[in-house]
Length: 341
Image (cartoon, rainbow, N blue to C red):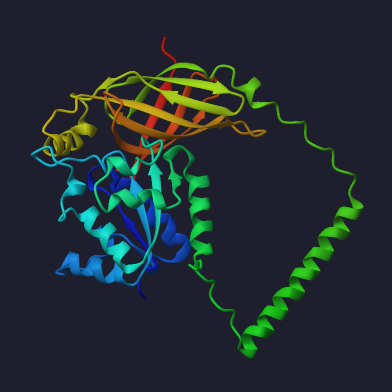
């Protein structure tokens, strides 16, 4: 089957988000309907021919507009999208020529699509298309809206396996239904003999049980040196921020710092954490914090990674323990947040 969804992105800052999007759309529509070059180009294939063939089938092109997609420059300082050989430009041009449907996705760090006057051809046509957002901190709702758009364009979700039709299967199903009905009758009969259940006490508002959440926390991720994070809360909404954090001595960042140096020719010495999420406290359960986070370079103008923080509070309320998931690494690391002494 030819892929119906084609994801186009700038590798330097869109690879992680493109990978996560392909994974989630594949779960909805089937992996065979989603084309992502790094996963779907076969060994030994000519990538340009393979991309051209896929785009020629008029899929829906999802163009991930990250900060560097349109602004990245080459060694001479010229815009990469002005180069006819730029992969993003080739994919965009091929999609237009084939009459593919285009959905620009504004990612974190891009608040609005650039004006046509700022863009070389054929990107000056971006304004002709209805755009959507794809933000790490609101990933679920943005993904659902995109799924609705794709279904409206005729891309059907993965179908469930057909029910077995053999006589034996039908007998088994009938027997199962009979047993289920007997079980339901038994349950209702038993309940009729029981006194009315006393409703559990109302769950206390999150704002009351989490009064100690806002403020500074010292975070330790794996064996790396600790660093400070600030949590802010309003009702059940929580936000995360940090001051510029040095990463020269952090082993977990060594490979990325080397990649950044090759990519930009500059050292990446500090990073910033930002994030938004929710706090909850179910009856009988520990307080839980779930945050979609973003990592920026020290200047705060380029997103370099994203992920999820999921922690639960200790009984004394002075520590939060859990996992820090990174979309870039496609893995998680243990994290502990403690109140400074």
